Length: 99
Length: 398
Length: 91
Ligand SMILES: Cc1cc2nc3c(=O)[nH]c(=O)nc-3n(C[C@H](O)[C@H](O)[C@H](O)COP(=O)(O)OP(=O)(O)OC[C@H]3O[C@@H](n4cnc5c(N)ncnc54)[C@H](O)[C@@H]3O)c2cc1C
Ligand code: FES
Ligand code: FES
Image 1 (cartoon, rainbow over the protein chains, first blue to last red):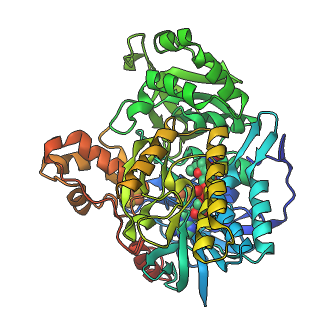
Image 2: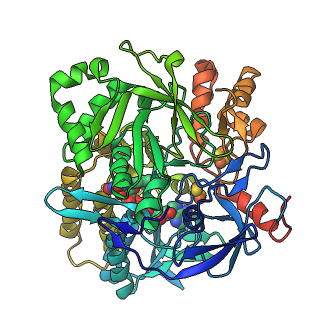
Image 3: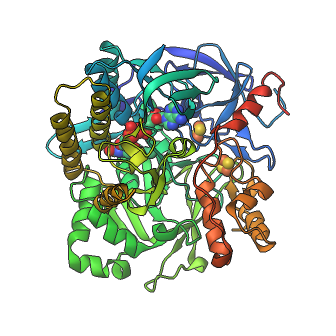
């Protein structure tokens, strides 16, 4: 899903970091958001809604809607779309039993 | 420590204002909830006729570098929760910052366009597609459908294609209490024509040209081809509605129904179209809740996109010392936002006694806003000028 | 269409909103209090306009008492509750 070579923006050179989502490790690029990193790894579903338990994911992409909220290193409800990945970051979905 | 000016929101309006005020000698802090400063600039990417590419991310970087180099302080990843008289800005961690003046430059948000199935993973707001593609460089999907026809969705469709995403089409939403004029082909045709006179890209230009022809415009709602018109390589379907977004857990198709010559939706002829991502474009509205919470007089002006704090020709709200700039005052492009930021900062600098010749500086700043508005290559609200006039009139009678 | 979610934060469907209007909810405020639509973690940024649209569309217009546009401080009170939950794991 990555746009390796953009016709106008060119190539992108960024350091790789490793993040963990629901117990599995993934490669992410330094500086990108959690949501972008997971999408680049073909992961869309970020959490399950509290009442209907329906799968939810990135929606507004700019921090307004809180649909992308995940638990990051023990802190609940961080917005995955505006939280930058860090090497060794431990992320988990809300609305499911902790893995 | 007390600041001369606290700016809330590090978009083009906020950063431009901070630079201007700092240059004039003010102590300035910008508070912004995002990890990176730049606001909606970060995702913007389009070709400006005769001027080359507008790469929002680079423009943002330049602005931030300039601001930092002259001593503007940035507080990123921090949300402003409230403003109290005096003035005090309360942050999300309950910390309070004292300041003589506040500039609220919180920008715009997207209006939701709910369609059955819109909470499924893979359905995103069009702005999210822009940020993912142009800023993070991750494709929002492999096969993408866009619902909602407006300058922003037409522009982003082109941006997606540029990045190698297959855009299967741009469709109308179903008729429901939420889609309103977005579901009306005739309204869209007439207004797209008004908004694309200096279009930022080929897509908008083609649509604009087609619609400027009065003959086409009149008949288009009726005779617009059922199979859409290809604009660039993207089909623009003004005679097809997406009735439903489907998929077991994540999006895997949309259900598309044709609109017949009389404008009716033919549900019996609906077909599924395979996609893995759907972008909804419901339009933009000013994000003005902070101003409302501190008691600024709020007015709803449809031509500007929604409810805004009433402001003076110098961008001051009805609360003395509280200023606004950018999309919180109405939906326009980034260059107008920058000019408004400049104007507000000039007014604030003048109050602080930092200007030698305040009236001529203000006059110039006001005329620059007007110039940028006239030269705008992307108009979001077809009647923005009328909207601005309404504000002026309302201010005079307050 | 009635099972379409309108308030994404609180999982409130269009059908629920309509039935509360039919059962006498006359203001956006009472609709919100009864269904929690608009009272979720995004504080109505996504659904406030939608809830207002549902009200105008389905209620007898003469019955609607318009509510004030202002948002009360703090803008995101819910976050405090969320923060308090930190470290407690998932509900
Ligand atoms: C999805 C989308 C796409 C757009 N695309 C284009 C385009 O292609 N071309 C164009 O010319 N215009 C576009 N626009 C219009 C855009 O709003 C303007 O170009 C311009 O960015 C407005 O500048 P601003 O400074 O007013 O606000 P913004 O750029 O929106 O910046 C406001 C900043 O304030 C922050 N903020 C908001 N509330 C708070 C708070 N309480 N505390 C702390 N920080 C806060 C926001 O997160 C944001 O970073 C787009 C707008 C949107 C919403
Ligand atoms: S997607 Fe809306 S807040 Fe993250
Ligand atoms: S969508 Fe309703 S409160 Fe967030």
